[in-house]
Length: 475
Image 1 (cartoon, rainbow, N blue to C red):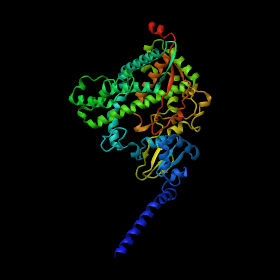
Image 2 (image 1 turned 60 degrees about the horizontal axis):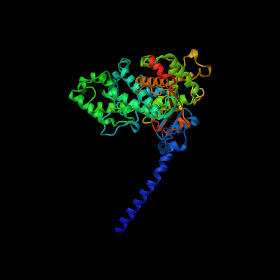
Image 3 (image 1 turned 120 degrees about the horizontal axis):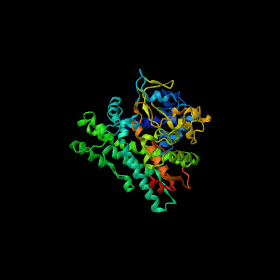
Image 4 (image 1 turned 135 degrees about the vertical axis):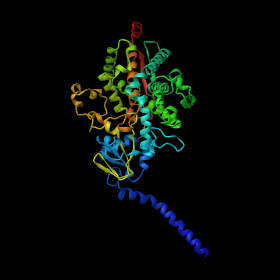
């Protein structure tokens, strides 16, 4: 009996070890030969295992690798055993816009789900009804009317930014000389201060002290004051005032949900905007003729610095073309927004995809595709000019392919605020300073990416504009 028991145990161990050793091989065979997505093209290693995807992600090469895969295998490719990627223009509406008679895909929990102990917010919520509740409550804070009310506060922070940059130049050089600055660092301090001012009614002081602020404590203190009734007495026309006006006693969104949503807006509303400002300015200094044209437009229009206002800047054709081109090439969220196909499967861009599949539209790959853009990797703001004055070589560009803020019910809720900040910072900076490339050229396409871009110092040469003292005195 003892020998028999020992023999059975040994046999069980052997079978277990055999099963463990065979499992990867069986999984690979299943993924390649029997999986519902087996007919979709893609590199064999990526189709058979998630491992190449993970390695590419960890190395920061995922966005570039995905673009290369699409260039080789086409507009609809399989990036992993259970993931399909699109670079078809019509996929934007199929994946992210509600279609009557079709079930909407939900956010992929791998990328969006918050830890269990963390309250849900507009970014992490996987439930469509909860997301709609958050968006409805927050959307009143991002209307054009709200932006008009918030403009003086935003403009005051740009005043401070320009003052601090003046101090920076003069602390290292004379007024006639240039110095080097990290534009991403300064843009980050600016955007954090702006969102802090709009969300909490007070600046984080990043521009004043030239460093980022541990804002979590300030957020907690603000919400405590709101519960105690103190904040209600001193609210300014910021976006929390608009939001809280319709959320008395937190009846629409709970206190914890409010805290989570404000926290995610502080993050999402700062990094992406700072990235957009930095990327656009980098491409401008690397294309001096485009920079010169924009500087002429800004300085030729505004004699007085104080006349540069948010409400005016949206009407400048070339300026807005520059920003659109900057957003196309320096998309702050290039990694795509993964969704999960609903039960029963669904058709996207004329392609049926089985239920449970992770799908996304690769905006970075589309924005740099020769299929959609002439000279796709070059900085040409002229492609965004109206049809009548757009250069011939860009007449067939598919401009709607570039969607840096995404589209549909999950698009960036801060889009109007981001545009206002980008326009104002660039206009004021180019009015007051001469900016140029430093000796070392940074290639934006070489920056590592996860879902967002891992920023490196983005150094620009900055010099106080000649004759600015007389201009300011005259004003």
